[in-house]
Image (cartoon, rainbow, N blue to C red):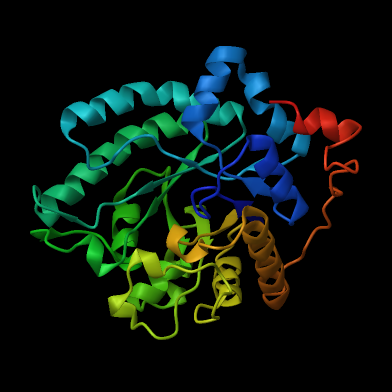
Length: 312
């Protein structure tokens, strides 16, 4: 397993070089890629230019969000699918082998059976494209009751339900094990072991408030891992390790819970808490080759660091 930073999971903004510097400074081994931005950069300047910061920093590609809405109307889906081959080719060129996509937890247009078949069919199309580049897609769920509110038809919103879809989907389709979702649904972490070998794509870790029953949790309650200790990061890592998982572990929190914390503090806290959970779970921590960026008295990067930080 390796520690992965997502600027969506922990909503962060800034220049790519600044975010990469933070990831390196605080113990992360990988970062997610914005595949649409990567495409714009590669179209304008070429793939090597688009990759240069990640390559220079020796960071792995964590995951990228699949630019296809699985529950979209047919015209939108076909348009997004037509653009997908080029984007998957670029993801492979960036050495980012894992995509993620979210499953809608309810619908007003489809019965459960019809919605299931729609997803299965579309995931088969997408899986064939993923296979051409040796990529995997991990599916995530939205477990909060608020996401299903006022919808006429319920759909997949538990990990066990997600496994039912993964079991019949294309071989390139897997699951994301989300600690928050397990807490909200009350499902046991033992379910992680039921994911078919090689189909666990990502692990996400968060925390939850002590004073809110799981059935009443909304996404706005989703805390930075380690904020309260209600959700044990180490327990999730241990379950993933037992399942043979070797992929990205990504901190995740709602923007509302991070108000008042600066960008550097957020990344440092996430890095420190992942390191502590790594040790508690008995996972090896490989020392980083990276040393902090050297700066002059005015805070400007100097020497080789100046070339890296300014390479945008």
